[in-house]
Image (cartoon, rainbow, N blue to C red):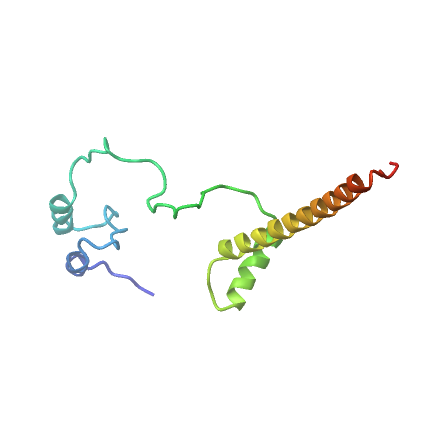
Length: 133
């Protein structure tokens, strides 16, 4: 497939999309003199980042924390596939739900154990008898 550069079409396309987020081609080699003039008009020679902030652009919802973790590839693939089979969504949300369920079950098991021990101890203190052990 032959490709021929058309500077006028390039300029018209840039002007059509000026101000949009689709400006990844700005500064690409091969732009005509006309496009260079458009760049000069649109782009500043310097930008001041004194009030810039580091980090993610989108703020986190309350109660969420951004972390980096390492996950086995097969585990991550499983979660992604589950989301895809469900018709879309976010695998991170599914992972969070799975972790939350795990924590809930662990907490319930601990609570159940504590109730049993307390019941036994309270029962023994009323009778004054203690099990050997």
